[in-house]
Length: 488
Picture 1 (cartoon, helix red, strand yellow):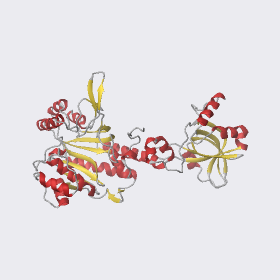
Picture 2: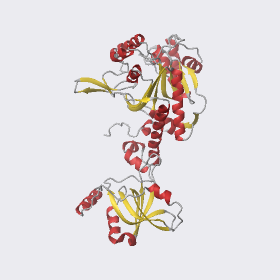
Picture 3: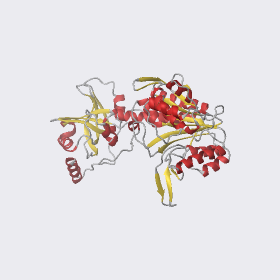
Picture 4: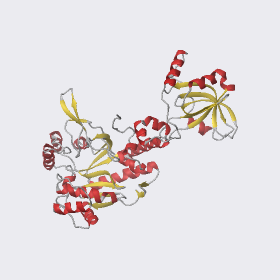
């Protein structure tokens, strides 16, 4: 680094800008490759082009120097590379000497010259001149040595520069996000934005991040869900709305959970859990098409997104897995016995239905590899879902499990303001009793609901977990810049 800083200072003293505002740049590297791919080994043209990129390989010899330039990545390309040759005869003695003295791996340069193919068959630019565009003061990682996972996420800029898989992850996520928006647009959904800073947290069972708004001198939280404000838009007359936004939950961090992540939530008037499930299936299949295949592999198991997406009622599915008939009225001692048999540690604070849900997550969920809508949950699961129309004590809600992991959730929305007030009051009392994940009583939302909401279906889809499904990567790889524990 000291040597590079000395080079920077020497350039400044010579009146040369180490960080140019503009450099010659007539062609992208990919354009040169496409236009001159027909050239034969040793063939030369008189076509002069100017290209620019980062130096990722360099070999300096006596009268001939070689460098490989790498372009940035785009929607359609993970980045192109092209060789530049600098000879004494073409750039002159001073130009060659300056190159050897001033240019290091990682620098950005512009090279102008003829398009040729080297004797070794490499499409190249035989430079007649070159210009330094940006001097790198830190050395870049070796292209042939793998970065550790920790280094990759902490220095994503370096990861992107040297590893194609990192660039492909960014492009895959962009393609998935674009596909989601295009599908929703085609279905007539409006994209809206809702507040990130909220006075009252709600819409999910999660521990919020707390902050303070100095202008009003009031406590605030970062949102844990998009739901309550999107529903207000529906109450105001929007037929179909969605938002793709950042969510913040002050909870654990592991391979499938991050404190800051991205959710898609969508709501449709005159729909229910089945209509919103069909829409969710279309979203995921369309995203698979955008990436090129409806078959994906998770932990060595092939998942067919083009097959049947089955519905699995909660209690019958749990009963099948445990070999015992379980239901909404199953005694707690039975659930605790099953927990012990399956080595699930029981929290004394869990109520019966919570224990049943933990059992399901522990025993059944990992076995659901093919797309499955787990439905007919106990009411505890979703305080914002409509009571089941035919099964007392249950709600019309589903979790979408693919590859043994929850990818999204949806339900027939609760629009009765009286029942909703009762549910939120229960949540508020739980919060007052010390439950950090319980929702608060949101009078503004209840007042809006009392204005009258149409029947509706709603869904939430974790974008990061959707990218995980298609790429097989952990959540830290799918998020471009994940939140990390500071290094000591």
